[in-house]
Image (cartoon, rainbow, N blue to C red; front, side, top):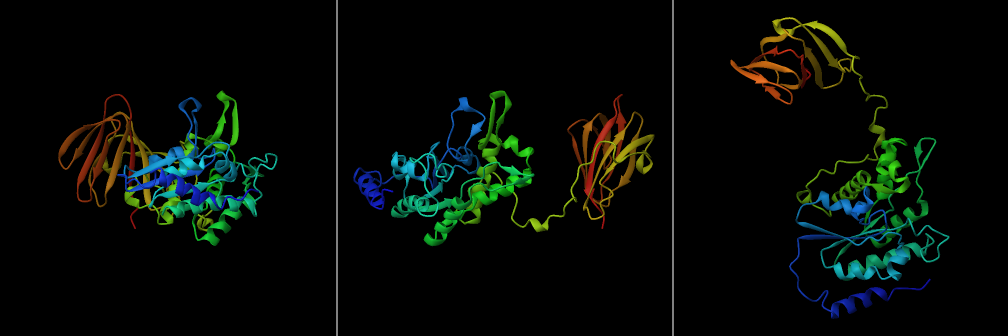
Length: 375
């Protein structure tokens, strides 16, 4: 393999003398530059819904962060450099930037000598060029293990990157480089989705005859971008004040905290029962006391159906309670004042207030009721 240890100083020297590094520039407080492959790269609108995670990353950060996505489809760590795409990265980089480096998918292709890198020596050797380039200009390199391919065996998500992901982890340890273990976090994400549901996040698009378990549907690209931003937060490289979306995404690695079978779905009618109208109200109602059989659930959630003539009698509250009107109309009395309410209205009654509600019109009044379970 042709050695490129002279590449970094040559790049810095040539770009510096042309003014790319020497000229002072007014710049945003933080810039993120991405070097990677097709899982991260940008795609034109004509290829919708195909998107790369790097294309979705700007949606997670505010205007104080600029994202320059230099990822290129079909490139390995080797071919990205040998074909000259590294020069675009070098022109972008400056002190204080983050350089996100994610390769591996194409480095694994042993039948293509222009891209193939064996994982123990060649792959980390090429990756090190990106690390050296970033450090030469005062930028911070961030290594990412390759994002997971969608591959299940007997219903279990299986890692397909093996020694390539291990090589990235080992290089990060040796060079003391920040690491986002995207391979591991995306594999847990896949496991959490399951074999069937995960298809919708990759390019399984029947109308376009696509069945692709490597590249992402827009929703999958956004989910993986969230994992990347979450990794930057965990590494202390991206302040929460710069985010405009939450990054509480994916599945943490503490899976032992999950109680299997504790979560479930209730179908319409599972908790249905007829009741007299509560609190001295007129008529009768249908109540759905959802999940009332779960003893350690801290909330009460009920759906209540008031047919014509039914109502909830006046009563004073000892806890905060929210009513949400799903359908129908009603007359709501709150602390002695009457209000007409209908679909989409939310009614908050605080502890100490009193209220009553009467169905009006011909249609049933359907409510969703929520409050904290009394202790």
